[in-house]
Amino acid sequence: MAIEVRIPTILRTYTDGQKAVEGGGETLADLFTDLETRHTGIQARIVDGGELRRFVNVYLNDEDVRFLDGINTKLTDGDNVTILPAVAGGMV
Amino acid sequence: MEALLLILTTMLTITQALVDQIVAHARQDHPDEACGVVAGPEGTGRPERFIPMLNAARSPTFYEFDSGDLLKLYRELDDRDEEPVVIYHSHTATEAYPSRTDISYANEPGAHYVLVSTADADDAGPFQFRSFRILEGEVTEEEVTVVETY
Image (cartoon, rainbow over all chains, first blue to last red; front, side):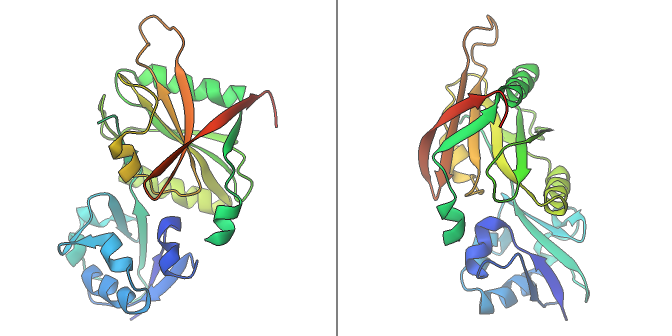
């Protein structure tokens, strides 16, 4: 099952500079485990304690997966997944 | 990645018009933090297109781009072969220097992080407009050169 995954600049060190890679899995959690087999280290930048990191946004097609089933969101062949770190900060 | 690091400069060159737009946005949203991007053609490091963003946190101490807006922004930059040359936000009660939070969430290694302080907003006195590189937790302040045109 092929899912296209768009990789943000900050994580391209794990993908030899590629902007997009392919992966597979029944759910997002499976997909990130699959990516880890070829792009060692990437999973820990996205997932922490079995959940998506708070300041990493993951989109399935155009939808933020937090409004779907989070890391357990089911995937279908041909889906597009986009990873974007939040742009956030503040004075504290 | 090496290629990216080579083109990093230690100076921000920006037009007066863009500086004015960033400061006006910061003042307008005070006492909440304001945030946004100035996009430029990929690889040039030249800030050109002012894109104010909504602070989804609507907070005087925190900012975060709305996640839907963030996706739209990056799609648009991609389609136009642009990158976020400047990422700006305001501090409303403290100096224009990256906080611990700013440093831990800084995820654009190629961007100039511009901070504006509106702590002076009541008497419209001198404000701070400063620019930084934030790379793997390291903050480097850089000179800001304001020009009329590029």
